[in-house]
Length: 248
Image (cartoon, rainbow, N blue to C red; front, top):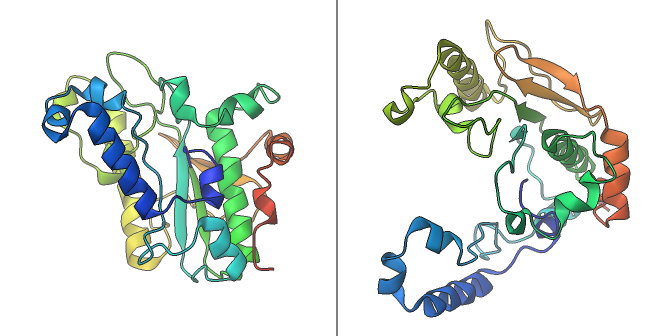
């Protein structure tokens, strides 16, 4: 959920994405020139990853799927990391999303704000007729490294895969391996049974729309989102009333 929330309502079409890709290649001077660019140069071209309607696998945007009642009765794990966009350029934050409501709610962390959105997703799924459970996660464990970036976007991946690359072997600690065993166990259990819970793990309850979420770290626990009510009101003021979604 770290992309602009208006994408929830208006997924671009695949044809538009293809045209945009052609434009980027042309502006770069052609495919060969693009291949010779550095990572930073490619990044500065304005590439942006987001869902699109391809007409085959994705036929509706998220809001339309909820309002039509087509949300399937499947269990879902969804989540964020504690400071999801730490270190990213302001242009990547989309439509002034964070500046629009992080100023009115300065006490709230990025994880709190995004976890509030995902609680809204749980409510919307239920309103859309889905009987599936929605497990909301905030990953709060800090990946060690030469610079402390907090729990940044993508830092949860080694832990859920329980795979720790030798490229960072100078930084991995015993607690990282422990969190890896825990996170991967939740994921494996969910894949097998539809529930992340299992023997020896702190119980992870599905969201009931009461703005609680499961905080995963060295000592995992369920927490209430402190500023959820204020955050929801700020979303409504900005025109992102995701709580209204659901079957009409």
